[in-house]
Length: 145
Length: 143
Image (cartoon, rainbow over all chains, first blue to last red):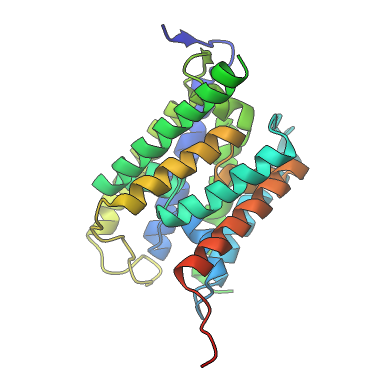
């Protein structure tokens, strides 16, 4: 049976944060004609095309400066990273190669693709959700349990 | 700096603030969503609902236009195939996501917050992306 962690559940701030993310994706498509897919934006920097670099760098810089802007107003919420360095390296490599191979991640397929009702993005999102659930199950309940 | 570059920067900033506000910059919270068999935190689902509700309207408007409001070409993805690459890429990404609790956006935000572990993840992710480029587009060899 599914057990809810009501102490951890943050419906209001998560919904509000989601709306921010949706507004950011709306800005990028309506102002720039671009999809807010982080892996595509960052991955495109590794295959530089003339005239196609500065908007990618600007978006990435904005993303990375967000915590600094947040911290000027309020304390930054805790970031807890339990994975050790070897796991982070394996996970990072796997994420990097897979998001380019599958042409998207949580933002490109999960947010933008589902918003466009793209069947491709629905399949990709189901794939990474399922393997994400399965991986955590194996790590926490089969190996770690 | 052109207006579209400024718009990109502001969109990135807003995206990052959204990730922080939603709690998704914290891998422990993401893993709380992915752990269906443990005490389940459904927050990530609400992030998706909020984001999609807003973005859906924007993409509807965008699909009727040839150019963006800043006169850039509207680059909406075409109808690609649902192929092995898409599924394998998705599955592989999910494994990495489940191992670390990081996907690309939150990892960059956590790096901006000065987290060393996020820096290691991002370095490995960039190496993975570069590896893909080498496999996909090997550098031209001298004849």
